[in-house]
Image 1 (tube, rainbow, N blue to C red):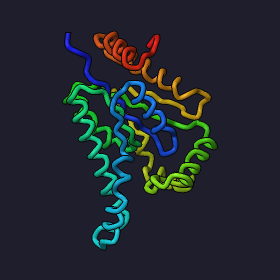
Image 2: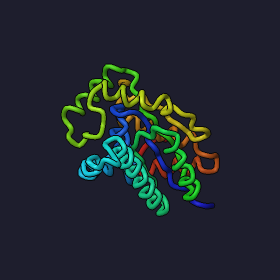
Image 3: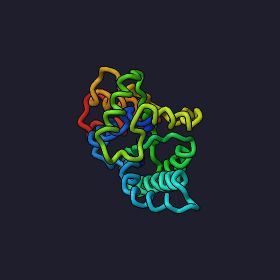
Image 4: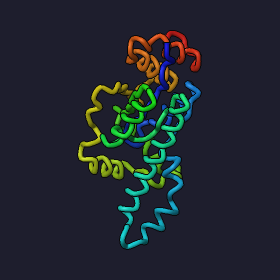
Length: 218
C-alpha cells in the first residue's frame, strides 16, 4: 500500500476571525510547518514605502503587487514542504477564487489532501472587539484593517467574491466566537478532515493524526 499523502490545511476567512490562532494550534498539534502569509507581508514595509513614491506605481498598486508576491512566496514554500511529504498549515485569508486555483494543482502534483478551514465570527461585536484591540496594539499589523470601518471597506472591495464556490474541496467552517476552546476546535477540525478522507486513506490518516497529535477518538 502506498503511504497516505500529506495534508494541506488552507485557512480562510476575513481579518480578525481567529484564523491565525487556530492555524497555530493546528500546526502545533500536528507538529507540521505553519506557512503564514503575514510573515512575508510584514517584511515588505520598506519596499512598499519605496514603491509608493514611484509615480508609475503608486501606493495602491504597490500594495497589490506586494500582496500578490506574498501569496506567491507561500505557495512556493508550501510546495517544497509538501514535496518532502510534510503536512502543512497555510495561514492566509484565501479571499479570492484565484488563490484556491493556485492550491489545486499544487495538491494534485504532490498528492496532498487539500482541506479548507474557514473561520467565521457569528458574534459581530466580539469580532469587532478583537479586530480593533489588535489594530491598537500590534505594529506588525500595519497592512491589515485596524478598525471596523477599515474591515468593512476591505470586504466591500471584494464585491462578494470572497464567498466563492470551492467545488469538491472539503471545507470545514468554524465559528471562532462560539464558547468553545481552541483545543476543542482543533479536535473537531482533525476529526472532520479524517471523515472527508477517501475510504482507502481513512484509517491511515486517522492513525497518522492520532500518533502526531496524541488525540483519542479521532
